[in-house]
Image (cartoon, rainbow, N blue to C red; front, side, top):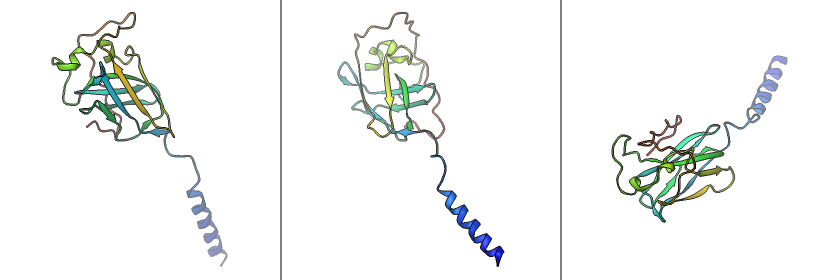
Length: 158
């Protein structure tokens, strides 16, 4: 009889502990926004977010220059840059508006674009890239932008 009572108390105690503990994983948030080039939607590109502490994510731009995360990304401070679209590969010539985007906007370090992603608030960003924007002092353009870093596991780039 005592064994049954002990088993019942142990089972109830274990069930009570199931709900306790730390929340799973780091704080996450959805992001969306628009990228314009000379006040017109930028298309045929991807917008890339990178943080040394929070990781990287890339979002394709639609016909209206709009992007939206399909999955939440970690909250944090991000450097932002323009990148190839998923159907364009590094090494080929760029055409259209992409060929006119100043080269420093392809660089996370030199674009001057940033995003602060926060939990519990809307994370809507608007980036207006100008063809007349001057590169920061000391910027040395590469012949072609580097390919995007690999996406974290579980993140799709469509």
